[in-house]
Image (cartoon, rainbow, N blue to C red; front, side):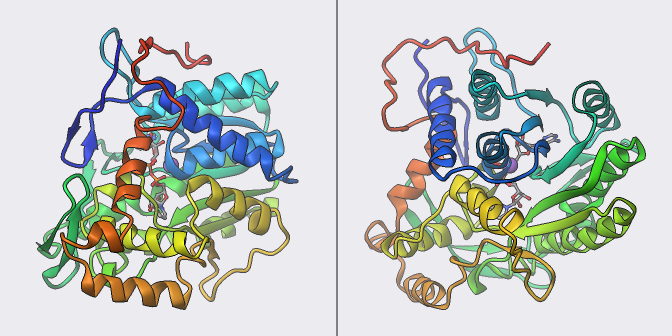
Amino acid sequence: MIIEPRTRGFICLTSHPTGCEQNVLNQIEYVKSKGKIEGAKKVLVLGASTGFGLASRITSAFGSDAATIGVFFDKAPTEGRPGSPGYYNTAAFEKHAHKAGLYAKSINGDAFSNEIKQEVVNLIKEDLGQIDLVIYSLASPVRTHPNTGKRYKSVLKPIGEVFTNKTVDFHTGVVSEISINPAEGDDIENTVTVMGGEDWKMWIDALKAENLLAEGATTVAYSYIGPEVTKPVYRNGTIGAAKDHLEATAFEITDDLKSIGGKAYVSVNKALVTQASSAIPVIPLYISLLFKVMKDKEIHEGCIEQIQRLYSERLFGGDLALDEKGRIRVDDWEMYDDVQEEVAELWEKATTENLAEIGDLQGYSDEFFNLFGFKVPGVNYEADVNEVVKIPSEK
Ligand code: NAI
Ligand code: NA
């Protein structure tokens, strides 16, 4: 079939298998071009199919020849209905990992559930014995709690007062003012339950209880801080409360791992166009200005550049360069004073009329479509493709 992008609001309903495969290939090539990393050899990636999690899986496999198990929640394609991009990404990743002689198996299901944790436990026991690196990169708007069956929804709201600022609809380029009402009722608790550290700790507890973590095992979860302009809705908002909880959980997990000399870290990453970040108001305008400034300064990075640098320079580079709160920072270039000052100036000026010029609106839009395998250079979108691709390890 011929597959075209079909968008509704901030989501794209279709995705392209050839474009997704090309994205994965480009990331593999990038990692290979940077040389070998003396890193972990048996890696579990939770949230492995898109964004930072996929980049982590690719960096482990093609940077350190690691065996990888990837967990994610994606829609498989059926006749006439494309799957979700994470499904196609994983099919492509496994295909090329296997071709390179690397172990790669995947589990598609709800990582918050006891059942999927048990499946992963069984798979590690059967195939790998022990894991030395666990990457926690889940991003989800909902979580069904495994102990109670209660379904929690996260929200993106400021705390305490209404937040009003600029935003952009990156499909139309229209800059407008948006007001977001503050959290109410259980909004904060619910968001912490979905995106905080509880599930991360549950994963590590489950693995440790079965003796599936190797001596000195490391686990890393991803966080974000960002600039002043997004603070009310991001870091000081409901999602920021969840990130505070996630960051605090790293210390708890490190305590739990003392007996095996293990460590838990949070890495604060750069703002990037991913499915998760496109849904947060104000962030797309910030990202389009940030990209412009960082590209002009030739310090722009995407997911794969971020994670390759995290691995090669921090995690396995001998210098974690932790901040005052014990976090790894690969958002360091985003947070450079000159970058933030220039973005803040542009922010004041940005209007519908000038954004295409002063910001990287085109870059944002292209990267958004790239997430779904569209507008990827070198892909022939007129060609007939088989949408019913399968992930090789899927039963
Ligand atoms: P993403 O949306 O690209 O990836 C999320 C992954 O989680 C996908 O593999 C998806 O299949 C999986 N997933 C979602 N719900 C699941 C479930 N119930 N069970 C199993 N898998 C599930 O997200 P992205 O942007 O890569 O985010 C990953 C982490 O990085 C998040 O903690 C996010 O806050 C953080 N981060 C994101 C930044 C950004 O700008 N996108 C910046 C800095 C940190
Ligand atoms: Na991810």
